[in-house]
Length: 155
Image (cartoon, rainbow, N blue to C red):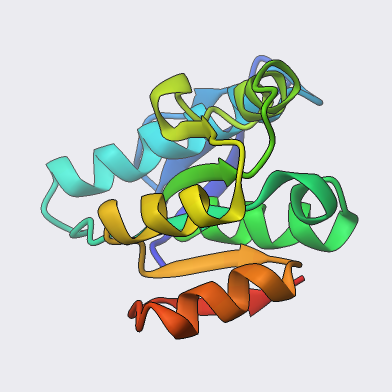
C-alpha cells in the first residue's frame, strides 16, 4: 500500500504522500471529494517516482451489489487500491447509477446500464475486466459458459 497519509490543513481533513507531501484537503462526508484528494496524493507519489500506478480494471453490478453495505465496502477498497472502476448493470435505467457513481468519483463514461445480463457479460469481456462483483447466478453462469477470464466475486 502506498504511503498515503491523513493530514489536516486549516482544520480541514486531507491526504498527502508520505510525511513531506502537500496536503490535499477534501470536503468532509463527500466521497467524491475525499477520493479526489487521495488520488492527488497518489499522483504526487507517482511524480516523485516513489509509486508506480498499476491499477486494474474492476467492475461492479449496481442493484443488490453496490446498493449493499458490503458492496460499498468492496468499492471503497478497490478505489483505495488505485484500480479503475466501472459499473456495469443489467438495468435499463442509468440515472440512479450515475448519481451513485458521481458520489464516488466514477466517470459517466465508465457507467453502463445495458438492459440484460448477456449484454453485461459481453461488456465485461470487451473491457477486459480483471475482477467483477455481482450477486447474480445467471451472470456467473454466463461468464463460465463464455469462458471469460475474470475473477468473479459474489456479493
